[in-house]
Each structure stands twice: as structure tokens, then as C-alpha cells.
Length: 116
Length: 114
Image (cartoon, rainbow over all chains, first blue to last red; front, side, top):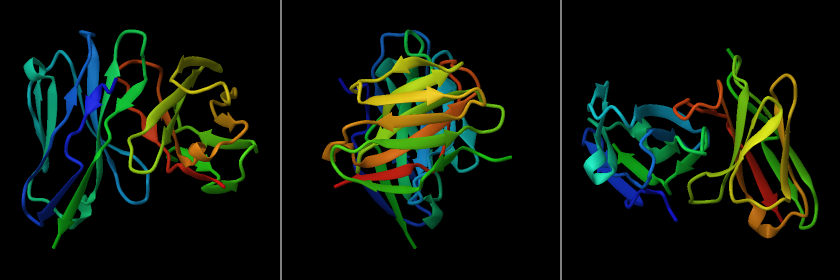
């Protein structure tokens, strides 16, 4: 069963618009971590943010912000004032704490296209 | 500070052949994980090596095997290649096997099976 669901296949925006990426996860563990990675056309996954299950405080880091809600098992990610360089595939990933140490489970990804 | 490196960059094989992919972890990292990413999909966990032993394994057949060396570098071996093995193979390294440890990814090896 898919544990991480990214319902949006592709999002197209014009530069300077905000982009919000949805992520819904499923786990029975009380200890887990959620991640967002970016994969540009070069193929290398680039770490963006990490949040643990005990900290629901939402934060902003530069143009990135995230909204973690355990009640709805969602971990959404927003890019503010998008730029062309933000064009990439974005992946949400789950790392669970029971019998799965260090094993990342990725969603299918959301393609973000930012046009000038 | 070198990041995660993988070789080769691209590889073309035919069905039934065997392939070996290589990975050198980021400096200071001792854990290596391998992922398979089919076109248009998210990475799928293959296995993880720590202290030269396989610690975690995903839902992949025994045709997929690996090894970790004393210098923490790792190899992924795939035997009896199938067309469905065509994918981008990603190596990731981390410091330890903790659930919250950030994994740093290499650029991947693009394997094409004809």
C-alpha cells in the first residue's frame, strides 16, 4: 500500500506566483520523519526540509514554508514567489521509526513548471 | 567536500546480463542506501548497508544484491537483467541509520536494459 500520496501530478505557474504541493502520508508509528526533496532535470535529489512527528510547528525558511498537520496526516510544502529555477519534480518522503530505520518511502512526485 | 558519487553515469545492457553499480558516500557518512527510480515514479527503496551488512531491504527479488566495503563505499549488483530493471539507480548516504537522518543522494546511474 502506498504510504505517501502526492495527488498532484503536475503544477504549472507563472513566475512569482506561489506554489503549494500536497502530501498525505500513512503510518502507525508515533515516531517518524517527513522530508521534501527536489529533483531537477540533472536527476540528483536535493534535500529541502525535514520535520519530525513531535513537532507540528510550521516554519518558513527563505521562500520555502511547510504546513504539518498530524490530525489530517498532511505535510504540505509551499514555494513563495516562484522562480524559473524552481522547476523540478518535488518528492515527499516518510521515514518511520519502527523496523524501518533509515528507509525512505517516497511519493510519486509532483512536477512543478515555472514559466517566465 | 565531495558529495555522493556514483559510477558509471549511464549503462546499457541486454536481458540476462549482470550489472554492477558503484557508490562512494559523502565524507563522514557510514551508511549507504540504494533506490530504484523508474521513469515518472518516485524512488523505491532497495536496501541499506551499514557496517558492511545489509540492514534493511525493500520488496526486491534476490537478483538484487549488494556489498559495502570497509571504506563505506558500496556496490549494487543485479543478475539476470529484465527489461523492467531499466531505471535510474540512486545511491544515498547518511551518518548512521537513525530514522530522522537526512540522506544525501548521488546523481544516479541510468541503466537501460535492451
